[in-house]
Amino acid sequence: MSRYRLCPTPVQEAGLLEHCGHARFVWNLAVEQHAWWTPSRGPAPGYVAQARQLTGARAANPWLAAGSQTVQQQALRDFAQAMANFFTGTHRRPTWRKAGRHEGFRIVGRRGRQWDVRRVSRKVQAVFRCVACGHQDNADVNAAINIRTAAGHAAAAREGPRVTGPVHREPQLVLLA
Picture 1 (cartoon, rainbow, N blue to C red):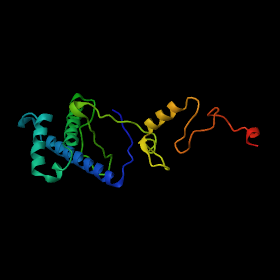
Picture 2: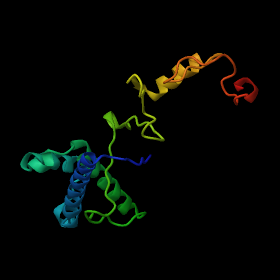
Picture 3: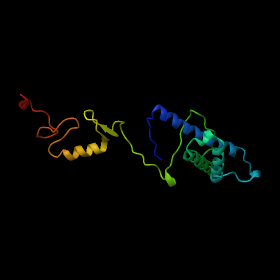
């Protein structure tokens, strides 16, 4: 599973923390439900039964209904996997999640596929803006245009066409005098 560092704005950060709160709330409900389970009560509810219960909880609780259903269902899937790992003996029993400690949630795309996420090394790399004329385009498109026009004479974003000669060459002092 890939992890990406995000640089959210304060508004986006509040939304992400709300998703974390919803995922933690659903996880803690599942932990509490399994803590009350005993063999005399029959089998513990699995993911499908808990997903049905989540639908009822979303209908009864507007705060929970305002959140992403995908995030909440993924928390239940992760809990089901954690319980399966516990019963195979490879992991400890899932425990409560506390607010502010290791906050996170997982999102999957449609039909279980991951979302298409592009890595960007810098914020300014995603969008190119020309200061002089105000032109705005994707940085990859701008780079492709510059590469295409660099066959013999380069055109910079703010300047006109350059003087003939090699593009990547130090200035000759003899020619400048």
